[in-house]
Image 1 (cartoon, protein in one colour):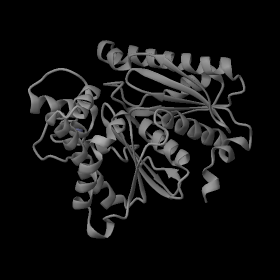
Image 2: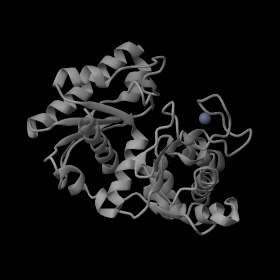
Image 3: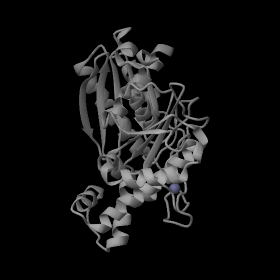
Image 4: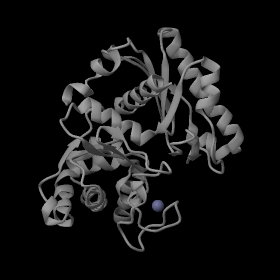
Length: 325
Ligand SMILES: [Zn+2]
Protein backbone atom coordinates (compact mmCIF):
# COMPACT_ATOMS: atom_id res chain seq x y z
CA UNK A 1 0.00 0.00 0.00
CA UNK A 2 2.82 2.36 0.93
CA UNK A 3 4.64 2.22 -2.39
CA UNK A 4 1.59 3.58 -4.12
CA UNK A 5 2.16 6.90 -2.35
CA UNK A 6 5.81 7.22 -3.14
CA UNK A 7 6.53 10.41 -5.11
CA UNK A 8 8.79 8.58 -7.48
CA UNK A 9 6.05 6.09 -8.25
CA UNK A 10 3.47 8.80 -8.74
CA UNK A 11 5.47 11.09 -11.00
CA UNK A 12 8.26 9.07 -12.59
CA UNK A 13 6.08 6.75 -14.61
CA UNK A 14 5.63 9.33 -17.34
CA UNK A 15 8.54 11.63 -16.47
CA UNK A 16 6.12 14.25 -15.17
CA UNK A 17 7.17 17.77 -14.25
CA UNK A 18 4.33 19.60 -12.59
CA UNK A 19 4.04 23.15 -11.29
CA UNK A 20 2.56 23.37 -7.80
CA UNK A 21 1.43 26.73 -6.44
CA UNK A 22 0.35 27.54 -2.90
CA UNK A 23 -1.55 30.84 -2.73
CA UNK A 24 -1.18 32.56 0.63
CA UNK A 25 -2.28 35.94 1.96
CA UNK A 26 0.98 37.70 1.14
CA UNK A 27 2.74 35.61 -1.47
CA UNK A 28 2.64 32.77 -3.95
CA UNK A 29 4.89 29.82 -3.36
CA UNK A 30 5.67 28.24 -6.70
CA UNK A 31 7.50 24.97 -7.22
CA UNK A 32 8.29 22.41 -9.87
CA UNK A 33 7.78 18.86 -8.65
CA UNK A 34 9.09 15.73 -10.37
CA UNK A 35 9.86 12.14 -9.41
CA UNK A 36 12.74 13.25 -7.17
CA UNK A 37 10.64 15.77 -5.25
CA UNK A 38 10.67 19.55 -5.26
CA UNK A 39 13.11 20.38 -8.06
CA UNK A 40 12.76 24.18 -7.93
CA UNK A 41 11.02 26.71 -5.73
CA UNK A 42 10.36 30.42 -5.82
CA UNK A 43 8.27 32.95 -3.96
CA UNK A 44 6.34 35.63 -5.83
CA UNK A 45 5.58 38.54 -3.55
CA UNK A 46 2.01 39.73 -3.96
CA UNK A 47 0.10 41.14 -1.02
CA UNK A 48 -3.24 39.53 -1.88
CA UNK A 49 -4.86 40.37 1.46
CA UNK A 50 -4.15 44.08 1.00
CA UNK A 51 -4.97 44.00 -2.71
CA UNK A 52 -8.34 42.44 -2.02
CA UNK A 53 -9.12 44.99 0.67
CA UNK A 54 -8.17 47.96 -1.48
CA UNK A 55 -9.13 47.00 -5.03
CA UNK A 56 -12.60 46.29 -6.42
CA UNK A 57 -13.01 42.51 -6.56
CA UNK A 58 -12.89 42.38 -10.39
CA UNK A 59 -9.52 44.16 -10.41
CA UNK A 60 -8.23 41.97 -7.60
CA UNK A 61 -9.13 38.93 -9.69
CA UNK A 62 -7.16 40.25 -12.68
CA UNK A 63 -4.19 40.93 -10.40
CA UNK A 64 -4.39 37.43 -8.90
CA UNK A 65 -4.45 35.80 -12.33
CA UNK A 66 -1.49 37.96 -13.40
CA UNK A 67 0.50 36.95 -10.31
CA UNK A 68 -0.28 33.28 -10.94
CA UNK A 69 0.74 33.66 -14.61
CA UNK A 70 4.04 35.25 -13.51
CA UNK A 71 4.73 32.30 -11.23
CA UNK A 72 3.92 29.74 -13.94
CA UNK A 73 6.06 31.61 -16.49
CA UNK A 74 9.06 31.60 -14.12
CA UNK A 75 8.64 27.87 -13.57
CA UNK A 76 8.41 27.24 -17.34
CA UNK A 77 11.60 29.23 -17.90
CA UNK A 78 13.39 26.76 -15.63
CA UNK A 79 11.54 23.62 -16.72
CA UNK A 80 10.01 23.97 -20.20
CA UNK A 81 8.96 20.30 -20.04
CA UNK A 82 6.30 21.08 -17.39
CA UNK A 83 3.10 19.29 -18.39
CA UNK A 84 0.52 20.32 -15.80
CA UNK A 85 -0.21 22.93 -13.12
CA UNK A 86 -1.92 22.53 -9.75
CA UNK A 87 -2.95 25.52 -7.62
CA UNK A 88 -3.93 25.48 -3.94
CA UNK A 89 -6.24 28.44 -3.48
CA UNK A 90 -7.95 29.69 -0.30
CA UNK A 91 -11.70 29.32 -0.75
CA UNK A 92 -14.41 26.88 -1.69
CA UNK A 93 -13.72 25.14 -4.98
CA UNK A 94 -16.75 23.61 -6.66
CA UNK A 95 -15.69 20.02 -7.41
CA UNK A 96 -17.84 19.79 -10.54
CA UNK A 97 -17.13 23.11 -12.23
CA UNK A 98 -13.59 23.68 -10.82
CA UNK A 99 -14.61 27.28 -10.19
CA UNK A 100 -13.78 29.21 -7.04
CA UNK A 101 -17.28 29.33 -5.58
CA UNK A 102 -16.24 31.79 -2.87
CA UNK A 103 -12.93 33.01 -1.47
CA UNK A 104 -11.76 35.38 1.26
CA UNK A 105 -9.29 36.65 -1.38
CA UNK A 106 -12.17 37.64 -3.67
CA UNK A 107 -14.87 39.15 -1.48
CA UNK A 108 -18.12 39.66 -3.36
CA UNK A 109 -17.16 37.45 -6.30
CA UNK A 110 -18.89 34.12 -6.76
CA UNK A 111 -18.07 31.21 -9.09
CA UNK A 112 -14.84 32.59 -10.52
CA UNK A 113 -12.93 30.67 -13.19
CA UNK A 114 -9.19 30.86 -12.49
CA UNK A 115 -8.03 27.63 -14.12
CA UNK A 116 -9.68 28.33 -17.51
CA UNK A 117 -7.79 31.55 -18.41
CA UNK A 118 -4.46 30.14 -17.16
CA UNK A 119 -4.94 26.87 -19.02
CA UNK A 120 -5.63 28.80 -22.21
CA UNK A 121 -2.66 31.12 -21.68
CA UNK A 122 -0.15 28.28 -21.27
CA UNK A 123 -1.81 25.43 -23.19
CA UNK A 124 -1.53 23.20 -20.10
CA UNK A 125 -4.07 21.48 -17.86
CA UNK A 126 -4.51 23.67 -14.76
CA UNK A 127 -6.39 22.48 -11.70
CA UNK A 128 -7.44 24.60 -8.73
CA UNK A 129 -8.06 23.00 -5.35
CA UNK A 130 -8.67 24.31 -1.85
CA UNK A 131 -5.29 25.20 -0.30
CA UNK A 132 -5.77 23.19 2.90
CA UNK A 133 -6.97 20.14 0.95
CA UNK A 134 -3.89 20.38 -1.27
CA UNK A 135 -1.68 20.62 1.85
CA UNK A 136 -3.50 17.61 3.33
CA UNK A 137 -2.73 15.60 0.22
CA UNK A 138 0.91 16.75 0.28
CA UNK A 139 1.23 15.64 3.91
CA UNK A 140 -0.42 12.34 3.07
CA UNK A 141 2.12 11.57 0.36
CA UNK A 142 5.15 13.00 2.18
CA UNK A 143 4.37 11.30 5.46
CA UNK A 144 4.72 7.89 3.79
CA UNK A 145 2.31 6.60 6.41
CA UNK A 146 0.45 3.37 6.11
CA UNK A 147 -2.90 5.05 6.66
CA UNK A 148 -6.00 5.34 4.52
CA UNK A 149 -7.67 8.33 6.17
CA UNK A 150 -5.99 11.51 7.35
CA UNK A 151 -7.26 14.76 8.80
CA UNK A 152 -5.07 17.83 8.24
CA UNK A 153 -5.48 21.00 10.28
CA UNK A 154 -3.56 24.06 9.13
CA UNK A 155 -3.10 26.75 11.78
CA UNK A 156 -2.26 30.04 10.10
CA UNK A 157 -4.05 33.36 9.71
CA UNK A 158 -7.20 31.23 10.01
CA UNK A 159 -7.71 27.53 10.61
CA UNK A 160 -8.10 25.38 7.49
CA UNK A 161 -8.63 21.68 7.14
CA UNK A 162 -8.46 18.85 4.64
CA UNK A 163 -9.61 15.24 4.73
CA UNK A 164 -8.05 12.37 2.79
CA UNK A 165 -10.40 9.41 2.55
CA UNK A 166 -9.23 6.10 1.12
CA UNK A 167 -6.16 7.82 -0.27
CA UNK A 168 -8.12 10.54 -2.10
CA UNK A 169 -8.77 14.20 -1.25
CA UNK A 170 -12.37 14.61 -0.09
CA UNK A 171 -13.70 18.05 -1.09
CA UNK A 172 -17.34 17.40 -0.19
CA UNK A 173 -20.29 17.98 -2.51
CA UNK A 174 -20.01 21.79 -2.51
CA UNK A 175 -16.25 21.95 -1.88
CA UNK A 176 -16.94 22.94 1.72
CA UNK A 177 -15.89 19.76 3.55
CA UNK A 178 -13.58 20.39 6.52
CA UNK A 179 -14.39 24.08 6.86
CA UNK A 180 -13.25 23.48 10.40
CA UNK A 181 -12.23 27.03 11.30
CA UNK A 182 -15.90 27.77 11.92
CA UNK A 183 -16.68 24.90 14.28
CA UNK A 184 -18.02 26.65 17.37
CA UNK A 185 -15.86 25.90 20.41
CA UNK A 186 -16.99 28.75 22.69
CA UNK A 187 -20.74 29.46 22.75
CA UNK A 188 -21.27 33.23 22.71
CA UNK A 189 -17.52 33.67 22.33
CA UNK A 190 -15.58 36.05 20.10
CA UNK A 191 -17.34 37.50 17.05
CA UNK A 192 -16.17 35.81 13.84
CA UNK A 193 -16.11 37.15 10.28
CA UNK A 194 -18.55 34.38 9.28
CA UNK A 195 -21.28 35.99 11.38
CA UNK A 196 -21.23 33.48 14.25
CA UNK A 197 -19.52 33.67 17.62
CA UNK A 198 -16.87 31.48 19.23
CA UNK A 199 -15.47 29.84 16.07
CA UNK A 200 -12.34 27.71 16.35
CA UNK A 201 -10.26 30.13 14.30
CA UNK A 202 -10.99 32.93 16.74
CA UNK A 203 -8.87 31.00 19.28
CA UNK A 204 -6.54 28.55 17.51
CA UNK A 205 -5.20 30.73 14.66
CA UNK A 206 -2.30 33.17 14.80
CA UNK A 207 -4.73 36.08 15.18
CA UNK A 208 -6.65 34.12 17.85
CA UNK A 209 -3.49 33.71 19.93
CA UNK A 210 -2.77 37.42 19.61
CA UNK A 211 -6.35 38.24 20.71
CA UNK A 212 -6.08 35.92 23.72
CA UNK A 213 -2.75 37.45 24.70
CA UNK A 214 -4.09 40.98 24.42
CA UNK A 215 -7.18 40.14 26.47
CA UNK A 216 -5.09 38.53 29.19
CA UNK A 217 -2.14 40.92 29.34
CA UNK A 218 -3.67 44.24 28.31
CA UNK A 219 -0.63 44.68 26.02
CA UNK A 220 -1.31 45.65 22.43
CA UNK A 221 1.81 44.78 20.50
CA UNK A 222 3.29 41.92 18.51
CA UNK A 223 2.16 39.00 16.41
CA UNK A 224 1.80 35.29 17.23
CA UNK A 225 5.57 34.77 16.90
CA UNK A 226 6.11 37.55 19.46
CA UNK A 227 3.63 35.86 21.82
CA UNK A 228 5.50 32.57 21.32
CA UNK A 229 8.80 34.24 22.24
CA UNK A 230 7.18 35.76 25.33
CA UNK A 231 5.85 32.31 26.27
CA UNK A 232 9.31 30.81 25.93
CA UNK A 233 10.56 33.49 28.33
CA UNK A 234 7.95 32.31 30.80
CA UNK A 235 5.32 35.06 30.38
CA UNK A 236 2.21 33.56 32.03
CA UNK A 237 -0.24 35.40 29.76
CA UNK A 238 1.54 34.26 26.62
CA UNK A 239 1.62 30.67 27.89
CA UNK A 240 -2.10 30.88 28.66
CA UNK A 241 -2.86 32.25 25.17
CA UNK A 242 -1.16 29.24 23.55
CA UNK A 243 -2.86 26.91 26.03
CA UNK A 244 -6.24 28.34 25.03
CA UNK A 245 -5.35 27.82 21.34
CA UNK A 246 -4.38 24.21 22.06
CA UNK A 247 -7.57 23.50 23.98
CA UNK A 248 -9.75 25.06 21.28
CA UNK A 249 -7.95 22.97 18.67
CA UNK A 250 -8.51 19.80 20.71
CA UNK A 251 -12.20 20.65 21.18
CA UNK A 252 -12.64 21.14 17.44
CA UNK A 253 -10.65 18.04 16.55
CA UNK A 254 -12.61 15.85 18.97
CA UNK A 255 -15.82 16.86 17.16
CA UNK A 256 -14.23 16.20 13.76
CA UNK A 257 -13.03 12.74 14.84
CA UNK A 258 -16.44 11.79 16.20
CA UNK A 259 -17.83 12.46 12.73
CA UNK A 260 -15.03 11.14 10.51
CA UNK A 261 -13.28 8.51 12.67
CA UNK A 262 -10.02 9.23 10.82
CA UNK A 263 -6.91 7.18 11.44
CA UNK A 264 -4.28 9.91 11.58
CA UNK A 265 -4.15 13.67 12.18
CA UNK A 266 -1.51 16.12 10.95
CA UNK A 267 -1.16 19.60 12.45
CA UNK A 268 0.46 22.10 10.09
CA UNK A 269 0.60 25.80 9.26
CA UNK A 270 2.81 28.48 10.79
CA UNK A 271 1.47 27.98 14.30
CA UNK A 272 2.63 24.38 14.36
CA UNK A 273 6.14 25.80 14.85
CA UNK A 274 5.00 26.65 18.39
CA UNK A 275 3.66 23.13 18.99
CA UNK A 276 5.86 22.64 22.06
CA UNK A 277 3.79 25.38 23.73
CA UNK A 278 0.52 23.64 22.84
CA UNK A 279 1.20 19.93 22.94
CA UNK A 280 0.42 19.15 26.56
CA UNK A 281 -2.82 21.10 26.85
CA UNK A 282 -3.87 19.77 23.44
CA UNK A 283 -3.45 16.09 24.34
CA UNK A 284 -5.09 16.46 27.75
CA UNK A 285 -8.14 18.18 26.30
CA UNK A 286 -8.37 15.86 23.29
CA UNK A 287 -8.53 12.74 25.47
CA UNK A 288 -11.17 14.40 27.67
CA UNK A 289 -13.39 15.40 24.77
CA UNK A 290 -13.14 12.20 22.74
CA UNK A 291 -15.52 9.34 23.40
CA UNK A 292 -13.85 6.40 25.18
CA UNK A 293 -13.63 4.17 22.11
CA UNK A 294 -11.40 6.74 20.37
CA UNK A 295 -9.21 7.77 23.32
CA UNK A 296 -5.49 7.07 22.77
CA UNK A 297 -6.34 5.44 19.44
CA UNK A 298 -5.89 8.28 16.94
CA UNK A 299 -2.32 9.23 16.09
CA UNK A 300 -1.48 12.94 15.87
CA UNK A 301 1.68 14.26 14.21
CA UNK A 302 3.19 17.56 13.21
CA UNK A 303 3.54 18.52 9.55
CA UNK A 304 6.32 16.72 7.66
CA UNK A 305 6.25 19.04 4.69
CA UNK A 306 5.96 22.45 6.34
CA UNK A 307 5.74 25.11 3.64
CA UNK A 308 6.24 22.52 0.92
CA UNK A 309 3.19 20.35 1.61
CA UNK A 310 0.86 22.80 -0.16
CA UNK A 311 3.06 23.05 -3.28
CA UNK A 312 3.55 19.31 -3.46
CA UNK A 313 -0.11 18.47 -2.89
CA UNK A 314 -1.23 20.99 -5.52
CA UNK A 315 1.31 19.59 -8.01
CA UNK A 316 0.16 16.01 -7.42
CA UNK A 317 -3.45 17.01 -7.92
CA UNK A 318 -2.42 18.82 -11.11
CA UNK A 319 -0.71 15.65 -12.25
CA UNK A 320 -3.81 13.58 -11.51
CA UNK A 321 -5.89 16.02 -13.56
CA UNK A 322 -3.42 15.72 -16.45
CA UNK A 323 -3.80 11.93 -16.42
CA UNK A 324 -7.59 12.36 -16.58
CA UNK A 325 -7.45 14.89 -19.44
ZN1 LIG B 1 -16.67 31.71 12.02
